[in-house]
Image (tube, rainbow, N blue to C red):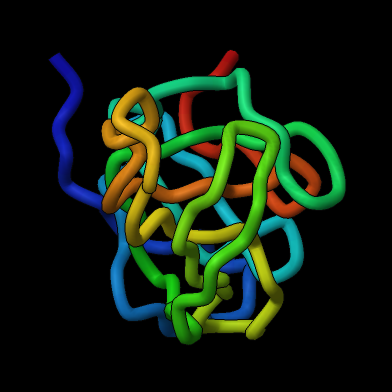
Length: 127
């Protein structure tokens, strides 16, 4: 079983400081723009979501992400209260957080996060 010790950073890369680092032994998703860790693959709920600009994934939890103010939006699945989320490192808007769903069938999304695929890259052990 692989150790979850993050180990030393590769010497050839410039040092970056993020709020949270995910263990190297987990498959992770990172910001395509700055490589800040965003989520563990274990937190992925669904790959069948649509973001504002294309396909998106739904996650149970994320790291290194900030949240804007909540607002009501009419999405493909009905009216929701959502807050845009952005990378804490490079400030790129990544997707949104579902704050409230107004339809009973959509309540499972509350507190979950959408990240658009165009803003993510897979890291650590996907081969």
